[in-house]
Image (cartoon, rainbow, N blue to C red):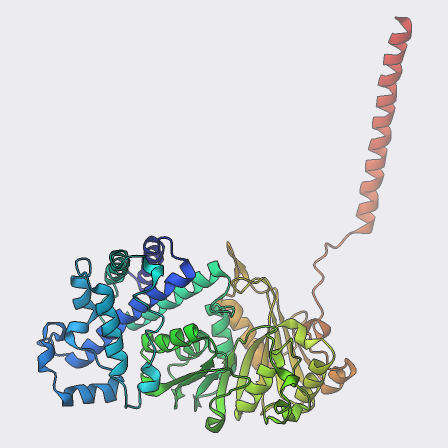
Length: 518
């Protein structure tokens, strides 16, 4: 079985588990249990693999908890960030899950133990609250303890039956891909992931490629609206060969997706010391101000989000927003996220941000912010994507690429709205489409009906309108009509009509004549 076949089979199994065991529980809520169990299995196997250190004579799951010395525990936590006793491993818990009358409370105790093992260590912030959404006492699982335990046991059994192969090799990628598949499918059904539109993997790949373009090393990668961390992880997948010195950074306002993002880091074997995901409102309570700048920024912030804006008089003096001289409208925070990203961007890097199209042509404060961005030569490229690429919305979004190291004052516009493959529910970007976009992004070549590099003066003349359609002439797909041929066809048609009329008249006359004779 190829890796692709193995991954496809795994995805089918996971989706089946989620559907079979959820019962009356809402799918989007119940995903927490499937994902949480998947994560529990992963860190159990990951930790056991670390302890065993490749020694086939050691089976950590079969050891007694009593042999664990304080030194062993201390050393493991410093390295892995957490500790799991042999009895707490997923494989040992699942053995007796169906007959364990205390399963829900035992699991709660294990999760508390894993999280608390990091207390006082550098990994504490990365581990704390990881299982917060895995509520084993919730009535969502059933009204009685027996019902809760039955459903929990079913989830454990289902996840235990997934074949990830040996832990090394493709195992890690399979865990992560299975996780992302489940997230994306629930997002497709629920419309939104934790309140924000989930970024499909092909779009994530494009964004990562844009942000990392021609950088052989970066200090760190940052997502100011991290969601489940998919954009950060695409950067890792695309650029494993490059040096990412200080790892993956992000901020997320939603507590559930914040936990999912941290889990996702571990599931892709990113250790606690290589990521820093924080909980909070990026616009009003930003983290990492002292950790700037970032060489690569990727983001899909929420569209047209309401925010406090001008109702907070201190924000106009915020160093992120003050240079523009105006705040993003209170009803549309899109440009607040853009200015935030720009403030965090290094002089060598790029920011690639998914944006709602309206911000590129509307007047008022948004026009003034566009003027600030263009006058200071921060806008490298605006890319118009095809509609219906995102789950839950048919909007044809744009990608804004910001740079602080442009060598000229032109701005590139790419109309990629015609690049998509039609699927059942959504359009998708193929690898060939992504490559086509990246090729013209790199070359800055003008391509008729596809890409145009526009001088600064032209943008000023258009009152800082940054809509792709303003500068890239759409291809005329109307059928070319040969007038001479059309006229000839009309003459033939008219002659035929005349002939038919004569024949009809003759028939009518004949009928009328017969009626008179009668």
